[in-house]
Amino acid sequence: MNICIFAASSSKIDKIYLDAASHLGELIASRGHNIVYGGGGIGLMGAVADAAMKKGARITGVIPKFMYDNGWGNDNIDEIIITEDMGSRKKKMFAISDAVIALPGGIGTLEELTEAITLKQLGLFRGPLVILNTKLFYSHFISFLESVIDKGFMRKVHKKIWVVAGSPEQAMEAISAYNDWHDDPVSIARI
Amino acid sequence: MALQVNDSNFEKVVLQSDKPVMVDFWAEWCGPCRMIAPFVEEMSKDYEDRALVVKCDVDDSPGVAVKFGIRNIPTVLFFKDGEVADKQVGAVPKTNFVSKLEALLD
Image 1 (cartoon, chains in turn orange, green):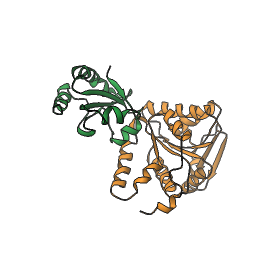
Image 2: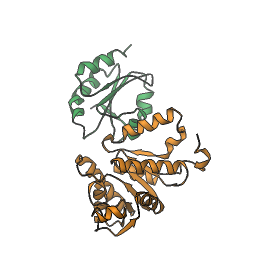
Image 3: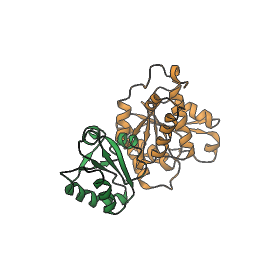
Image 4: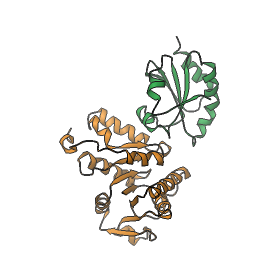
């Protein structure tokens, strides 16, 4: 399985986030899966890719040309796919991935996570979507999504789009145990 | 040791309890959680006949943490008849927990 990782490029963060990212990378590799990610060499992106690569996973980085030209890419990985821009990067990542795990991150990661939720709501991505809630990072965001649902902007059933994991082990279990959240998502995409 | 509850047993142990329940939401990485841990242990013994005082590791129990909107820890929730009756966020003196739990006792 190709598991898509959305994660921070920042390294100026609590070590607990880096440790969880590395541990997740090891678990992905040890279970025989491969990684698709944003192609960066530092932060949580670098941590997950490096740890998975050391344990034998195949790593594919998908990175926009301007980022690669700025030297932000990780040249140690198995494959780098260079895209024209940010939009085509995400499109490519979803196209070649079977599952998504969102780790903590900044606005770029949040954008990727919310696009994943949107695509699942519309039935355009059908794989598991796991939010790794290391150190309760996403708890405010998840509460906000619940308030969006409570106010009628999304349906209650849309809560099934994402699964929240407290640890890397739980994230892997959620992927193994996944059943599609709805048979025909587009039929209930409009509120 | 105070009883640990999780996603699997929360419904049965906490929500279906016929006594008031105090739940300390904590995690290994949380420094302030360690400050209140001794109070929680003491209260689990002091109130063992009249109430349940339990702990819930948010890393092990993401479902419960999401369900009850736990965004910062320590958060202590007080349940009565399966409903949240009171809440205390942060490391505060033991008397705060005692008075909130006492208020729920018949």
